[in-house]
Image 1: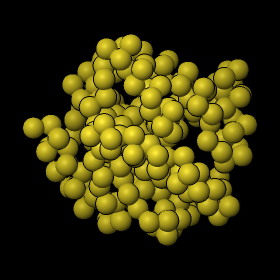
Image 2 (image 1 turned 120 degrees about the horizontal axis):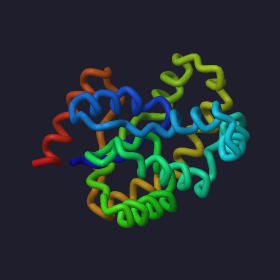
Image 3 (image 1 turned 90 degrees about the horizontal axis):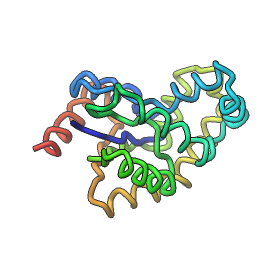
Length: 187
């Protein structure tokens, strides 16, 4: 059983590498963006509240994300392990996640950070061409990531649960580095 958090700014290769890890480890990926899209699409009360933040290109507030994560981590398909992709994004969320995982009896094994320069993040995000990938929204995401998430790296580093992978290279090279890092962690 392996429980991982995959961290990195938008454009770092998080989703691509989460899929690679999913195939390698045969455990589900819990994608924040998929959870948010589903909540918005089903137009639940929580989904409508989430939509206002997503439409503005802002992070969804901690209390909403924690509620969504609790619901997802209590589902049956994650009992053999999981990869959280895009969550937590703040130290507070990480602490709350640790409390939740302790309560559920499934502590986190490792956090993996896909590190990339601002230039790379901007270029990759712009090349995706998503409806919400305007230069202003992308820049705002990068700024928010740097402001909110960098302390998260210190949090996991302090707990000696952080693995940093340089994600500036092509997909195959990043995947190989990630695979090597995971194999080392699981020994």
